Length: 146
Image (tube, rainbow, N blue to C red; front, side):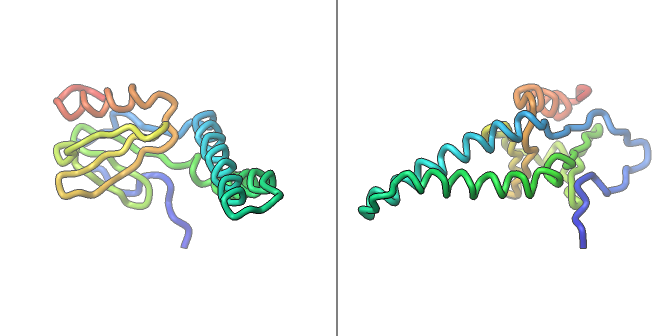
């Protein structure tokens, strides 16, 4: 089964999509560059701590691991879309949350994490302008247009 990366939840009567949040290709590659830098440092540190004389190979391993993952997942991750209506956020793979149920909004890199009152967590990943994403969601939560 191939997961749907766009919202499949039907709109309710009178409900319209006010804004769609799409991932940004630049943010995707920028985030992965930071992850790769971290993986390279951790790989080198692990080899240094264990006394391996070829510490530099940790950088190659860290870079290779992140690069393979980034290239493999890019086609799916860059198709993910969230639609915001007057009352809900509809996301990939059937995600559906009411704006009134959002308890907290957090920034994580280029992503925006939404935490619901029940503790569920949802990520709008690779946003070009995460502050704008948060502002649009906040406005919609307060009854304004997204």
